[in-house]
Length: 384
Image 1 (tube, rainbow, N blue to C red):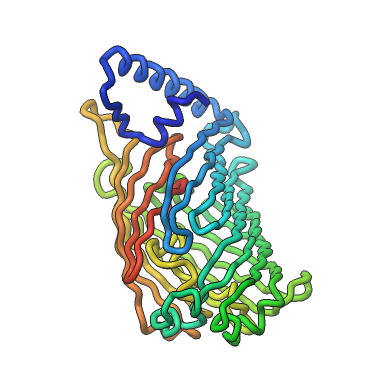
Image 2 (image 1 turned 60 degrees about the horizontal axis):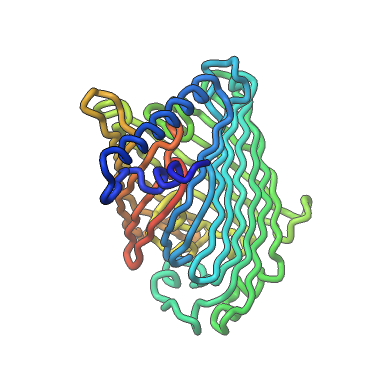
Protein backbone atom coordinates (compact mmCIF):
# COMPACT_ATOMS: atom_id res chain seq x y z
CA UNK A 1 0.00 0.00 0.00
CA UNK A 2 1.43 3.34 -1.00
CA UNK A 3 2.77 5.90 1.43
CA UNK A 4 0.03 8.45 0.73
CA UNK A 5 -2.69 5.97 1.69
CA UNK A 6 -1.14 5.32 5.10
CA UNK A 7 -0.77 9.04 5.71
CA UNK A 8 -4.37 9.56 4.70
CA UNK A 9 -5.59 6.91 7.14
CA UNK A 10 -3.58 8.34 10.01
CA UNK A 11 -4.52 11.94 9.27
CA UNK A 12 -7.94 11.80 7.66
CA UNK A 13 -8.49 15.56 7.86
CA UNK A 14 -5.97 15.68 4.99
CA UNK A 15 -4.11 18.79 6.14
CA UNK A 16 -0.86 19.33 4.25
CA UNK A 17 1.22 22.30 5.43
CA UNK A 18 2.92 24.43 2.75
CA UNK A 19 1.57 22.35 -0.17
CA UNK A 20 1.15 24.13 -3.46
CA UNK A 21 -2.04 23.62 -5.45
CA UNK A 22 -0.39 21.21 -7.92
CA UNK A 23 0.76 18.83 -5.16
CA UNK A 24 -2.63 19.01 -3.50
CA UNK A 25 -4.41 18.22 -6.76
CA UNK A 26 -2.11 15.24 -7.38
CA UNK A 27 -2.77 13.84 -3.91
CA UNK A 28 -6.50 14.36 -4.28
CA UNK A 29 -6.40 12.58 -7.63
CA UNK A 30 -4.59 9.62 -6.04
CA UNK A 31 -7.17 9.43 -3.27
CA UNK A 32 -10.05 9.65 -5.71
CA UNK A 33 -8.62 6.79 -7.78
CA UNK A 34 -8.04 4.71 -4.67
CA UNK A 35 -11.56 5.36 -3.36
CA UNK A 36 -13.03 4.45 -6.75
CA UNK A 37 -11.14 1.13 -6.74
CA UNK A 38 -12.33 0.44 -3.18
CA UNK A 39 -15.93 1.14 -4.19
CA UNK A 40 -15.66 -1.39 -7.03
CA UNK A 41 -14.19 -4.00 -4.68
CA UNK A 42 -16.97 -3.40 -2.16
CA UNK A 43 -19.69 -3.65 -4.81
CA UNK A 44 -18.25 -6.91 -6.15
CA UNK A 45 -17.79 -8.38 -2.68
CA UNK A 46 -14.04 -8.75 -3.12
CA UNK A 47 -11.41 -9.03 -0.40
CA UNK A 48 -10.31 -5.66 1.04
CA UNK A 49 -7.48 -4.81 3.43
CA UNK A 50 -6.77 -1.46 5.08
CA UNK A 51 -3.51 -1.04 7.05
CA UNK A 52 -3.29 1.48 9.90
CA UNK A 53 -0.54 2.64 12.26
CA UNK A 54 -1.08 5.02 15.14
CA UNK A 55 -0.50 5.99 18.79
CA UNK A 56 -2.70 5.36 21.80
CA UNK A 57 -2.84 5.77 25.54
CA UNK A 58 -4.72 3.70 28.09
CA UNK A 59 -4.38 3.75 31.89
CA UNK A 60 -3.07 0.16 32.05
CA UNK A 61 -0.69 0.28 29.05
CA UNK A 62 0.55 3.87 29.09
CA UNK A 63 1.53 5.29 25.70
CA UNK A 64 1.59 2.72 22.92
CA UNK A 65 2.18 2.40 19.22
CA UNK A 66 -0.16 -0.02 17.48
CA UNK A 67 -0.28 -1.28 13.94
CA UNK A 68 -2.88 -3.42 12.31
CA UNK A 69 -5.25 -3.98 9.47
CA UNK A 70 -8.95 -4.25 8.78
CA UNK A 71 -9.73 -7.24 6.56
CA UNK A 72 -13.17 -7.64 5.03
CA UNK A 73 -14.73 -9.95 2.45
CA UNK A 74 -17.92 -11.67 1.37
CA UNK A 75 -18.11 -15.41 1.85
CA UNK A 76 -20.44 -15.54 -1.17
CA UNK A 77 -19.86 -12.76 -3.70
CA UNK A 78 -23.03 -13.66 -5.62
CA UNK A 79 -25.24 -12.94 -2.57
CA UNK A 80 -25.88 -9.19 -2.76
CA UNK A 81 -27.85 -9.17 0.53
CA UNK A 82 -25.10 -10.85 2.57
CA UNK A 83 -23.14 -8.68 5.03
CA UNK A 84 -19.40 -8.35 4.57
CA UNK A 85 -17.37 -10.38 7.03
CA UNK A 86 -14.64 -8.49 8.87
CA UNK A 87 -11.49 -9.28 10.86
CA UNK A 88 -9.71 -6.32 12.48
CA UNK A 89 -6.20 -7.22 13.66
CA UNK A 90 -4.01 -5.13 16.00
CA UNK A 91 -0.46 -5.59 17.32
CA UNK A 92 1.29 -3.10 19.59
CA UNK A 93 3.97 -2.25 22.10
CA UNK A 94 3.79 0.29 24.93
CA UNK A 95 6.15 2.46 26.94
CA UNK A 96 5.57 0.22 29.97
CA UNK A 97 7.10 -2.72 28.08
CA UNK A 98 3.76 -4.34 27.30
CA UNK A 99 3.19 -6.43 24.17
CA UNK A 100 -0.37 -6.95 22.99
CA UNK A 101 -2.15 -8.42 20.00
CA UNK A 102 -5.82 -8.97 19.20
CA UNK A 103 -8.18 -10.03 16.43
CA UNK A 104 -11.97 -9.99 16.34
CA UNK A 105 -13.71 -11.89 13.57
CA UNK A 106 -17.35 -11.47 12.50
CA UNK A 107 -18.22 -13.76 9.59
CA UNK A 108 -21.46 -14.53 7.74
CA UNK A 109 -22.00 -17.75 5.77
CA UNK A 110 -24.58 -19.64 3.69
CA UNK A 111 -26.93 -16.69 3.01
CA UNK A 112 -26.51 -15.58 6.65
CA UNK A 113 -27.88 -18.85 8.01
CA UNK A 114 -24.57 -19.44 9.79
CA UNK A 115 -22.56 -16.82 11.66
CA UNK A 116 -19.09 -17.34 13.06
CA UNK A 117 -17.48 -15.05 15.61
CA UNK A 118 -14.10 -15.28 17.32
CA UNK A 119 -12.05 -13.15 19.71
CA UNK A 120 -8.30 -13.62 20.10
CA UNK A 121 -6.21 -11.76 22.67
CA UNK A 122 -2.59 -11.97 23.82
CA UNK A 123 -0.94 -9.72 26.39
CA UNK A 124 2.36 -9.85 28.25
CA UNK A 125 2.59 -6.74 30.36
CA UNK A 126 3.53 -5.06 33.62
CA UNK A 127 0.16 -4.67 35.33
CA UNK A 128 -1.57 -3.73 38.56
CA UNK A 129 -3.82 -5.93 40.69
CA UNK A 130 -5.95 -4.17 43.32
CA UNK A 131 -7.78 -7.20 44.69
CA UNK A 132 -11.43 -8.25 44.48
CA UNK A 133 -14.35 -5.92 45.11
CA UNK A 134 -15.25 -2.25 44.80
CA UNK A 135 -13.57 -1.23 48.08
CA UNK A 136 -10.21 -2.62 47.00
CA UNK A 137 -10.48 -1.06 43.55
CA UNK A 138 -11.41 2.30 45.01
CA UNK A 139 -9.17 2.45 48.09
CA UNK A 140 -5.96 0.53 47.32
CA UNK A 141 -3.29 2.94 46.10
CA UNK A 142 -1.57 2.02 42.85
CA UNK A 143 2.18 1.65 43.47
CA UNK A 144 5.11 -0.72 43.01
CA UNK A 145 4.70 -1.95 46.62
CA UNK A 146 0.91 -2.41 46.62
CA UNK A 147 -0.38 -3.45 43.16
CA UNK A 148 2.52 -4.24 40.83
CA UNK A 149 2.95 -7.59 39.09
CA UNK A 150 3.50 -8.94 35.56
CA UNK A 151 0.58 -10.56 33.76
CA UNK A 152 0.62 -13.03 30.89
CA UNK A 153 -2.83 -13.51 29.38
CA UNK A 154 -4.35 -15.06 26.31
CA UNK A 155 -7.90 -15.86 25.26
CA UNK A 156 -9.41 -17.72 22.32
CA UNK A 157 -13.20 -17.41 22.17
CA UNK A 158 -14.89 -18.81 19.01
CA UNK A 159 -18.63 -19.30 18.58
CA UNK A 160 -20.93 -20.51 15.81
CA UNK A 161 -24.59 -19.49 15.58
CA UNK A 162 -27.42 -20.79 13.40
CA UNK A 163 -30.15 -18.39 12.24
CA UNK A 164 -33.12 -20.73 12.44
CA UNK A 165 -35.65 -17.93 11.92
CA UNK A 166 -35.21 -14.36 10.70
CA UNK A 167 -33.27 -12.43 13.40
CA UNK A 168 -33.32 -15.40 15.81
CA UNK A 169 -30.05 -17.31 16.36
CA UNK A 170 -28.77 -20.06 18.63
CA UNK A 171 -25.45 -21.84 18.88
CA UNK A 172 -22.43 -22.90 20.86
CA UNK A 173 -19.43 -21.09 22.31
CA UNK A 174 -15.96 -22.24 23.37
CA UNK A 175 -13.78 -20.15 25.69
CA UNK A 176 -10.13 -20.97 26.40
CA UNK A 177 -8.16 -18.53 28.52
CA UNK A 178 -4.97 -18.34 30.56
CA UNK A 179 -3.90 -15.80 33.21
CA UNK A 180 -0.53 -16.12 34.95
CA UNK A 181 1.02 -13.56 37.27
CA UNK A 182 4.73 -13.22 38.05
CA UNK A 183 7.12 -10.85 39.86
CA UNK A 184 4.29 -9.85 42.19
CA UNK A 185 4.89 -7.39 45.01
CA UNK A 186 4.23 -8.70 48.52
CA UNK A 187 0.73 -7.22 48.79
CA UNK A 188 -0.39 -8.84 45.51
CA UNK A 189 1.26 -12.18 46.34
CA UNK A 190 -0.57 -12.31 49.68
CA UNK A 191 -4.02 -11.60 48.22
CA UNK A 192 -6.20 -14.69 48.94
CA UNK A 193 -7.61 -15.07 45.43
CA UNK A 194 -4.26 -14.48 43.73
CA UNK A 195 -2.50 -16.94 46.04
CA UNK A 196 -5.18 -19.60 45.51
CA UNK A 197 -5.47 -19.43 41.71
CA UNK A 198 -2.20 -18.10 40.26
CA UNK A 199 -0.77 -21.61 39.98
CA UNK A 200 -3.99 -22.75 38.26
CA UNK A 201 -3.94 -20.39 35.26
CA UNK A 202 -5.69 -22.40 32.53
CA UNK A 203 -9.47 -22.29 32.02
CA UNK A 204 -11.67 -23.91 29.41
CA UNK A 205 -15.44 -23.85 29.02
CA UNK A 206 -18.29 -24.75 26.68
CA UNK A 207 -21.59 -22.97 26.55
CA UNK A 208 -24.75 -22.04 24.73
CA UNK A 209 -25.68 -18.69 23.24
CA UNK A 210 -28.96 -17.26 21.95
CA UNK A 211 -29.47 -14.00 20.08
CA UNK A 212 -32.14 -11.73 18.69
CA UNK A 213 -30.39 -9.58 16.08
CA UNK A 214 -32.25 -7.17 13.81
CA UNK A 215 -29.30 -4.78 13.27
CA UNK A 216 -28.84 -3.56 9.72
CA UNK A 217 -25.04 -4.01 9.88
CA UNK A 218 -23.56 -5.97 12.77
CA UNK A 219 -20.26 -4.09 13.20
CA UNK A 220 -21.74 -0.59 12.80
CA UNK A 221 -25.48 -0.61 13.32
CA UNK A 222 -27.73 2.32 12.44
CA UNK A 223 -30.98 0.63 13.40
CA UNK A 224 -32.38 -2.44 15.12
CA UNK A 225 -32.10 -4.49 18.28
CA UNK A 226 -29.44 -6.85 19.57
CA UNK A 227 -30.14 -9.17 22.53
CA UNK A 228 -27.54 -11.77 23.52
CA UNK A 229 -27.86 -14.40 26.25
CA UNK A 230 -24.91 -16.65 27.08
CA UNK A 231 -24.09 -19.33 29.66
CA UNK A 232 -20.71 -21.11 29.89
CA UNK A 233 -19.62 -23.98 32.15
CA UNK A 234 -15.86 -24.07 32.87
CA UNK A 235 -14.16 -27.09 34.34
CA UNK A 236 -11.74 -29.98 34.33
CA UNK A 237 -13.89 -31.88 31.81
CA UNK A 238 -12.13 -29.80 29.13
CA UNK A 239 -8.75 -29.79 30.86
CA UNK A 240 -9.29 -26.55 32.76
CA UNK A 241 -7.79 -25.94 36.18
CA UNK A 242 -10.90 -24.38 37.73
CA UNK A 243 -14.63 -25.11 38.02
CA UNK A 244 -16.97 -22.14 37.70
CA UNK A 245 -19.86 -20.80 35.62
CA UNK A 246 -20.49 -17.50 33.82
CA UNK A 247 -23.80 -16.11 32.54
CA UNK A 248 -24.14 -12.85 30.63
CA UNK A 249 -26.77 -10.64 29.03
CA UNK A 250 -26.18 -7.91 26.44
CA UNK A 251 -29.04 -5.68 25.22
CA UNK A 252 -28.51 -2.98 22.59
CA UNK A 253 -30.82 -0.61 20.73
CA UNK A 254 -29.93 1.59 17.75
CA UNK A 255 -32.19 4.53 16.86
CA UNK A 256 -31.76 6.87 13.88
CA UNK A 257 -32.48 10.40 15.11
CA UNK A 258 -31.84 12.55 12.04
CA UNK A 259 -30.06 11.58 8.83
CA UNK A 260 -28.61 8.11 8.20
CA UNK A 261 -25.55 7.63 10.39
CA UNK A 262 -26.80 10.04 13.07
CA UNK A 263 -27.93 7.61 15.70
CA UNK A 264 -28.41 6.99 19.39
CA UNK A 265 -26.81 3.69 20.48
CA UNK A 266 -27.90 2.25 23.84
CA UNK A 267 -26.39 -0.71 25.68
CA UNK A 268 -27.11 -2.54 28.93
CA UNK A 269 -24.77 -5.43 29.75
CA UNK A 270 -24.26 -7.74 32.71
CA UNK A 271 -21.81 -10.57 33.47
CA UNK A 272 -22.39 -12.90 36.42
CA UNK A 273 -19.76 -15.44 37.54
CA UNK A 274 -20.37 -18.13 40.15
CA UNK A 275 -18.47 -20.67 42.29
CA UNK A 276 -14.66 -20.91 42.26
CA UNK A 277 -13.81 -17.94 40.05
CA UNK A 278 -10.08 -17.12 39.64
CA UNK A 279 -8.96 -13.50 39.81
CA UNK A 280 -8.31 -13.36 36.06
CA UNK A 281 -11.88 -14.46 35.29
CA UNK A 282 -13.70 -12.05 37.58
CA UNK A 283 -16.08 -9.66 35.82
CA UNK A 284 -14.17 -6.46 35.03
CA UNK A 285 -14.92 -2.91 33.91
CA UNK A 286 -12.68 -0.54 31.96
CA UNK A 287 -12.18 -2.38 28.66
CA UNK A 288 -12.07 -0.64 25.23
CA UNK A 289 -15.66 -1.86 24.76
CA UNK A 290 -17.44 -0.56 27.88
CA UNK A 291 -16.37 2.13 30.42
CA UNK A 292 -13.50 3.54 28.41
CA UNK A 293 -11.19 5.62 30.63
CA UNK A 294 -10.94 3.28 33.62
CA UNK A 295 -7.95 1.11 34.41
CA UNK A 296 -8.80 -2.31 32.98
CA UNK A 297 -8.93 -4.72 35.92
CA UNK A 298 -8.94 -2.16 38.73
CA UNK A 299 -12.59 -2.91 39.43
CA UNK A 300 -13.35 -6.64 39.41
CA UNK A 301 -15.77 -8.93 41.21
CA UNK A 302 -18.02 -11.86 40.41
CA UNK A 303 -20.82 -9.70 39.02
CA UNK A 304 -20.77 -6.62 36.80
CA UNK A 305 -23.45 -4.39 35.25
CA UNK A 306 -23.12 -1.27 33.12
CA UNK A 307 -25.20 0.94 30.86
CA UNK A 308 -24.09 3.37 28.12
CA UNK A 309 -25.82 5.87 25.85
CA UNK A 310 -23.74 7.02 22.86
CA UNK A 311 -24.62 9.51 20.14
CA UNK A 312 -22.84 8.96 16.80
CA UNK A 313 -22.96 11.80 14.30
CA UNK A 314 -22.08 11.33 10.62
CA UNK A 315 -21.16 14.56 8.84
CA UNK A 316 -22.53 15.43 5.41
CA UNK A 317 -20.95 17.24 2.47
CA UNK A 318 -22.43 20.32 0.83
CA UNK A 319 -23.80 18.15 -1.98
CA UNK A 320 -25.79 16.08 0.53
CA UNK A 321 -23.51 13.04 0.38
CA UNK A 322 -22.49 11.43 3.67
CA UNK A 323 -18.79 12.01 4.39
CA UNK A 324 -16.34 9.54 5.91
CA UNK A 325 -16.01 11.58 9.12
CA UNK A 326 -18.02 10.96 12.28
CA UNK A 327 -18.00 12.22 15.85
CA UNK A 328 -19.28 10.44 18.94
CA UNK A 329 -20.01 11.20 22.56
CA UNK A 330 -21.21 8.99 25.39
CA UNK A 331 -22.19 8.84 29.03
CA UNK A 332 -22.46 5.71 31.13
CA UNK A 333 -22.10 4.08 34.51
CA UNK A 334 -21.22 0.65 35.81
CA UNK A 335 -20.87 -1.32 39.01
CA UNK A 336 -19.33 -4.51 40.38
CA UNK A 337 -20.47 -6.65 43.31
CA UNK A 338 -20.06 -10.18 44.75
CA UNK A 339 -23.73 -10.76 43.93
CA UNK A 340 -26.35 -8.77 42.03
CA UNK A 341 -26.83 -6.19 44.82
CA UNK A 342 -25.13 -3.34 42.96
CA UNK A 343 -24.55 -0.28 45.13
CA UNK A 344 -21.42 1.63 44.11
CA UNK A 345 -21.63 3.10 40.61
CA UNK A 346 -18.71 4.32 38.51
CA UNK A 347 -19.54 7.25 36.18
CA UNK A 348 -18.07 7.45 32.70
CA UNK A 349 -18.13 9.79 29.71
CA UNK A 350 -16.11 10.48 26.61
CA UNK A 351 -15.86 11.75 23.07
CA UNK A 352 -14.62 10.07 19.92
CA UNK A 353 -13.78 10.39 16.26
CA UNK A 354 -14.48 7.88 13.49
CA UNK A 355 -13.10 7.69 9.97
CA UNK A 356 -14.72 5.24 7.56
CA UNK A 357 -11.87 3.21 6.05
CA UNK A 358 -14.22 0.73 4.38
CA UNK A 359 -17.99 0.92 3.80
CA UNK A 360 -19.66 0.97 7.24
CA UNK A 361 -16.33 0.03 8.89
CA UNK A 362 -14.33 2.69 10.68
CA UNK A 363 -11.13 3.52 12.47
CA UNK A 364 -12.14 4.47 16.03
CA UNK A 365 -10.36 7.01 18.26
CA UNK A 366 -11.94 7.48 21.69
CA UNK A 367 -11.06 9.68 24.66
CA UNK A 368 -12.69 8.19 27.77
CA UNK A 369 -12.88 9.77 31.22
CA UNK A 370 -13.28 7.84 34.48
CA UNK A 371 -13.20 8.99 38.10
CA UNK A 372 -9.40 8.94 38.41
CA UNK A 373 -8.06 8.20 34.92
CA UNK A 374 -8.45 9.00 31.26
CA UNK A 375 -7.72 6.79 28.26
CA UNK A 376 -7.17 7.30 24.53
CA UNK A 377 -8.23 4.25 22.52
CA UNK A 378 -7.21 3.35 18.97
CA UNK A 379 -9.28 0.58 17.45
CA UNK A 380 -11.47 -0.59 14.55
CA UNK A 381 -15.28 -0.45 14.45
CA UNK A 382 -17.61 0.69 17.19
CA UNK A 383 -17.26 -0.26 20.85
CA UNK A 384 -20.68 -1.96 20.62
